[in-house]
Image 1 (cartoon, one colour):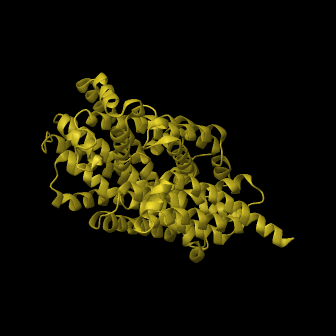
Image 2 (cartoon, rainbow, N blue to C red):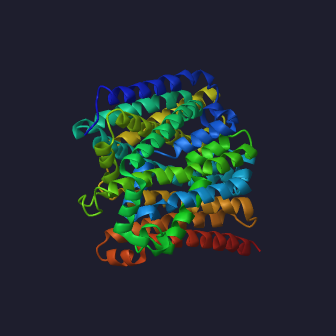
Image 3 (spheres, rainbow, N blue to C red):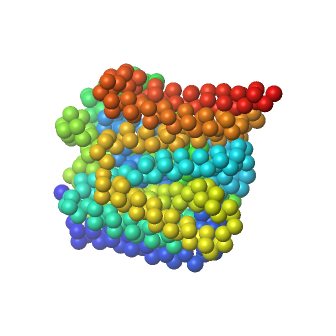
Length: 487
C-alpha cells in the first residue's frame, strides 16, 4: 500500500475544498426554477460536452468497465464502442433529441403530456424516479469500496467518509442547482481526464503493452478480443448491450437534462456527436486497468470478487502522489455523477409527479425552495439506502434491472411520441406495464428455487431483448386497440 495521507491526502482534500468553494460561489446566479433545473437553457456546446462526459463517468462506471476487462479481455470494451456508435448516430440525425429540445420541455414526462395525457406524464415520472433512485442507491457504497481498496481506508470509517463527501456534493447542488453542477462538472472533467491519462500512461509504461496483450491471449484466447465468440457474451450480449445503451442515450435523465439545457437543438446534436468519442475512451481506459490486474491475478484468484481486481491493482502498482491524483480524479468523477443525479431525479419529482399539486402556479421562490428540499431529501435517501444499509444482492444484476425498468418503457414512449402518429394513451400504458414487468419478473424467477433454472436457461440477455420487443408490441397493440374501439 503506497498511499500517503500527507501527500495523497492533501491532494484529495485540496480538490474537494476547491469544488465546494466553486460550487457555492455560483448560487447567486439562480433566480428562478428554470435557472435551477436547466441553467436557463443557455448551455453552450463546450460546457455541455464537459458536463455530459463528467456526469456519465463515475466510480461505478469505472469499476464496471474494469471488471468487464478483467473477466472478458478486450471483448469487455464493446460497451464503449456501442455507446459511442449510438450516441453519434443520435447526435448526427437528431433522432428524438431534436423534437424533444424543440418542444422546450424541462423533462421527458412533460414532453409525453403533449403527446399522450397528463396521467401518462405522471406515470412515466413515477417510473423514472423509482428506477433512477434504486439505480443510484448503490453509487455511494461502490465509491466507498473503491476507497477502501485503493487508499487502505479502515472499513469502520467508510460510512463517515462517504457521508462527508455526499454533504459536500449536496451543498453546492442544493444551493446552486444546474448552474453549480455545470461549472463543477467542467472542473471535474479536467481533473478526471488528466488523472486517467496520467495513470494509464504510467501503467502501460511500467507493465508493457505486450505483457497486457499476452495476459489476455493466454487467459482467454481469441475470445478475449472478439465478443461474438466469447461463450459468456455472444451476439445476444452485443444486441442487448446496443439496445440498452441506445435507450440510455435517449432517455437517461442526467443525459437528457443536458439536452434540455442546451441553447437549441443544434447545440444538443453537436454535443452528442462530439462527446460520443469520449465514451470509447471512458470504456477502454478502465478496461485496460482491469487487464493490467489480469497480469497479476487470474480470474479465479480473487475468491469470487473480480470487481475488486482493479482498485487492488492500483493500490499495489501506483507510487505515492500518483495514487492521490487517481483518487482525486475518481472522486471528481463521482461528485459530478452524484450531483447530476441528485438534481435529475429532483427535477422529475417536482416537474412531473408534484405537478398535480402545484399546476405551475407556485411562485419562483417557492418552486426553487421545493427543488432544494427535494435534492436534500434524495441525498438522505442515497445515504441511508445505499451506504448505511448496503445491498446484499449482486451489484451488477441489480443495476441492470433498475435501468431496464426505466429505460425500456420510456424509450418506447419517446420514439413513438416523436415518430408514430397513431401512438396514444392505451399504447403508452401498455408499454409502461410490459416494459417494467419483464425485468422485474426475470429477477423474481431467479430468486425462486423452483424457477431459478428456468431463468438461467433464458439468461439476462435474451430476457432484455425480449423486454424491448414486448414493450413495442404492447405499444402497437394498445394504440391500435383504442383506435379500433373508437370506430
